[in-house]
Amino acid sequence: MTAITAARSPSHWWQSRVMRRFMSHKLALFGLVMISLLTLACVVGPWLLPYDMLFIDLRARFAPPFTGNHYLGTDPLGRDIAARLLMAGRVSLLVGFIAMALAILVGTLVGVIAGYRGGWINAVLMRTVDGFLSFPSIFLLLALSAALKPSPMMITVIIALTGWMEVARIVEAEVRSLKEREFILAGRMLGLGRAHIMFRELLPNVMGPIIVAATLTVARAILLEAYVSFLGFGIQPPLPSWGNMLNGAQQYLAGAPWLAIIPGAAITVAVASFNFIGDGLRDALDVRSDTV
Image 1 (tube, rainbow, N blue to C red):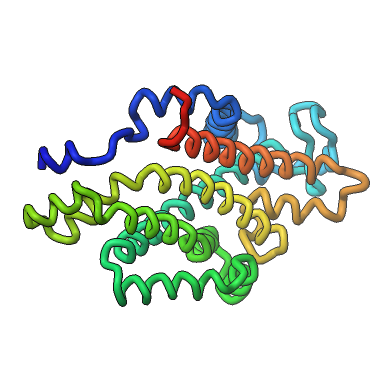
Image 2 (cartoon, rainbow, N blue to C red):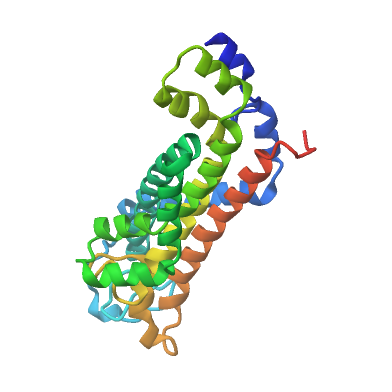
């Protein structure tokens, strides 16, 4: 095992050079700070607000932001927007992270097996990937959401089922390029099993692209959940999500634009921040980069 470990390609993501590259990427750092603050606010914020997401104050209907204790105003029922926004953030971020984990798990498993085994196994698995990719993801997502009960867990699973294919393609290409390298040949000569080589030798060497794909998959999942919920096929009230908050705000755009601006801004910040982090990780993990 020592010989195999020594033969592996250098530069794992936690090494200091990669960290320096990431820390020098200003947009990535900005995205990391924003996501950290947004996540902290969604986790802790609802406990610090004077109202919960279901409290109705009929005397304060359509209150604009910074009115009394309603820091972000109220909705048509007099519910506090700040409380609903942060609770919706819990839901949307949780959907994004769980959908990402499921998509990465399925895509990585398919990609590693297809890339290493090759032959008819590769052909079957990758043609399956091509078959899924031949359907526009958003229409497949809407069809599944309309056919199934739109609970948060169901929406999460559906988003994951429409997002693993790109991960499988990335992992399959990386594994196919690595499987003839010296450390894999050494493992075969030592009699290591296929599962050991795939998941103990190859998989750690493709973690860079997987990590980048994971950050971008979270952004995609948050955006898809918001899109489906905005159209009414996603998470249903009274449980808030950023998407169904936008759905409820569309008829009040002229008189109360903050009802749409606030959740729209939250979606923009979350998606843009994850994309910035993904760009920073891609640059930091690029072995061809001259930055040290």
